[in-house]
Amino acid sequence: MADDDEDLDLNSLSDDELVEQMWDDLYDGLADEITQGTNILLERGWQPYDVLTKALVEGMRIVGIDFRDGILFVPEVLLAANSMKAGMAILRPLLAETGAPKMGKMVIGTVKGDIHDIGKNLVSMMMEGAGFEVVDLGINNPVESYLEAIEEHQPDILGMSALLTTTMPYMKVVIDTLKEKGMREDYIVMVGGAPLNEEFGREIGADAYCRDAAVAVETAKELIARRHNKGPSLEAAG
Ligand code: B1M
Image 1: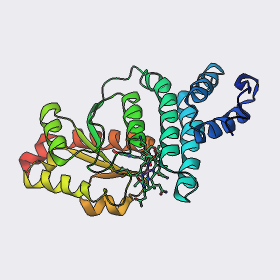
Image 2: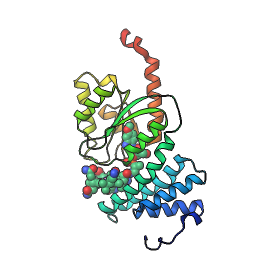
Image 3: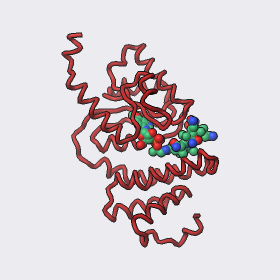
C-alpha cells in the first residue's frame, strides 16, 4: 500500500478520503503521513478530539482486528503504534489546552508484565485536557511503583491499565496490597483496558471500570464530586 501512496497529495483529498487514507497509513506504519494528515484535519477546523477518535483510534481498531487474525504481526503493529503516537503528540497539547481549573490528581500506569501504553496515554491526555493533573508511570509497573508514586504524589485517583488477559489479574494484586496496608479507602481506583469489563472491575474491588478515555474523564469527575460531597464528617460519624 505504501508504494501506491508515495505521490499522493493528502491535501487534495476530501475529509472522508483523508480519514480513510489515514487508516491505511496507520496500518502501514507511516508516521510522517499520520503527522501530515493530523495537521491537515486540524487546519480544516477539525476538533482535536474528533481527529483522535475518528482518524487515529479507529485506525488502530482496524490494525487490532488484523493483528488478532494473524494478518499483521508484532513488528508491523509496533510501527502502527508509533505512527499513532506521532499523531497523538500533535494532539496532546491541544487537548490539554482547555485552561480548566485543576480537578484533581491521578497517578496512572500500565500493570506489570504489560507494555501496551496507547490507551493509557490517551486516558492521560484526556484527563489532562479535562483539568486533571496526571502522573504517568509508564508501562510494566509492579505494585511497588504504584505504592511509591501514591506516597510521593498523594493523588485522588489511582488508574491502572491492562491489555492482556494474563496481566489484568495483577490489578487485584495492587488493590489487595492497598487493602492490606489500610490505604484502599484513601484513593479512588479506576481501571481500564480492552479485555476488562464492568464485572471484572467490581470483582477486583475497583471503584470503576472505564470503557474508554471519555468515560474515564466523566467517571473521575463524578467520583471526585461524590467524595467531596461526602466530606470528612461521614468518616467521623462512622
Ligand atoms: Co498487543 N495484544 N500484544 N501489542 N495489541 C492486543 C491487546 C491483543 C488483543 C491483540 C489480539 O490478539 N487481538 C492481544 C491480547 C490477547 C489477550 O490477552 N487475550 C495482544 C497480544 C497477544 C500481544 C502480545 C502478547 C503479542 C506477542 O508478543 N505475541 C504482546 C504482549 C507484550 C506485553 O505487553 N508483554 C503484544 C505487543 C503489542 C505491541 C508492542 C506490538 C503493540 C503495543 C504498542 C504500544 O502500546 N506502545 C500492541 C498493540 C498495539 C495491540 C493492539 C493491536 C492495539 C492496542 C491499542 O493500542 N488499542 C491490541 C488489539 C486490541 O486491543 N484490539 C493488542 C488502541 C487503544 C486506544 O485502545 O488500549 O483498549 P485501548 O485503550 C482504550 C480503553 O481500553 C480504555 O481507554 C482507552 C482509550 O479509549 N483504557 C483505559 C485503557 N486503559 C485504561 C486505563 C484507565 C481507563 C481506561 O484507567 C483509569
